[in-house]
Image (cartoon, rainbow, N blue to C red; front, side, top):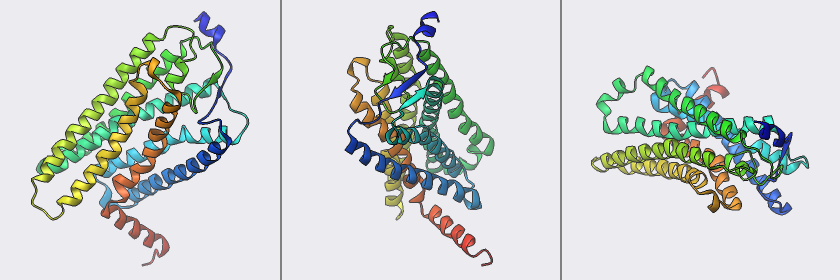
Length: 312
């Protein structure tokens, strides 16, 4: 602890996504557009589910949780990137860096597990339809929704504690656009093997297990769909493959960041991949999972009509 107290600076300086002024302008405009879509799409889904009794089902309960996580997840990253890009002050306090890391890791872990929960919900609905109501009862759904938050918070607390015990003495400049574990480990002048092991364990337990459960659920779902003799089979199959594409993008990018050995890390590649799962995936989630859904679109139209003409 003595080394820690002597070497920990008062502030860090985030170097951002790019040092090229032209790329900074383009990146800033794209981030503003994507962040606006994230907020608009996820807030629209939350409001629609809240206002529409027919959407008060387990599937939309979990989708609402996903939307809330996506709003919080991207909000821990994007505003800071925009501030650092538009301002000459790129500093972040130690407390702010720790808080950002705690929220970011907690929300990221919660989303990993929630996607697996949502896949399980769809598995029960499609593969065990006669048992769906009894299995996915209110109490069980609340427990399934709480588990990702609890595990995500525990994991982030462990990672933050282990990271901030290190003496970060090489430089005060973080070659990244937010406070994350891999770029901070590069600042340490002490062996980080324990931290790397904890990252691999966390990624294996949280990310790989969630992805495996999600993949197994969708394999059963697609297998069941292919056995159906229904005109709607193609539409359901298309929806499931869209879900699986977004899920694979999210899990794949996280595994790329956290399951690499430290010697193989490329800062520029890590920055690009991080943008994919912190901004791009939260932008696509409400579109792929819900707004493309005919039931949701009908409810949105009905709610808009009620707002515009309440007496109708």
